[in-house]
Amino acid sequence: MTKEEALTQYLVDHQTGFYRLAYSILKNPDEALDAVQTAVCRALERQDGLRDTGALRTWFYRILVNTCRDALRHRGREIPFPEDLEPSREDPEPADDTLIRRVEALPPEMGMVVKLRFYEELSLKEISQITGQNLSTVKSRLYAGLKKLRVAMEGAEI
Image 1 (tube, rainbow, N blue to C red):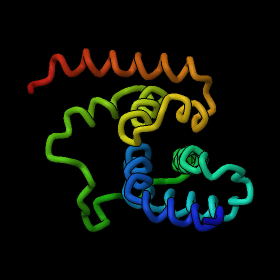
Image 2 (cartoon, one colour):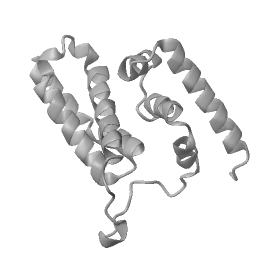
Image 3 (cartoon, one colour):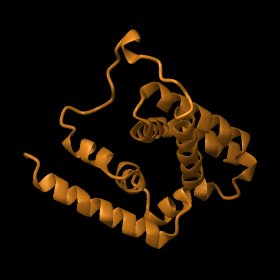
Image 4 (spheres, rainbow, N blue to C red):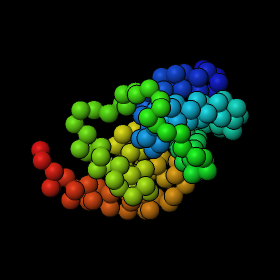
């Protein structure tokens, strides 16, 4: 299988997970779709930069996370359109969202590591490569985030 075929197959097979991650970062369905589309276009344009198809997952998640960060930075420069003028849409949230709300309440750097580790099932080494942080920083943010979640969930009704 060529590098191009491997990339195309990976993008098609994992698009739901890409959207889930983008939505968890951006918290807006339209922006999440735009971010995934932009990340896919960037990956296809830059596929020559992928040396090892074994690193495809880490390589693409880094592109996606950076695209979401760009969208968040760009969001601060725009004047928001009043949401009550748009037709309502259902957000992809489960009925019991207690844990999800707690993860969203974490500081952004901790929340990102928790989401990548448990939502996307990435290893700590992969998270380190995706976020550009050293491994010990990723570990400390993960464990600090989990500790905060544990404390927050102890008070929640089960």
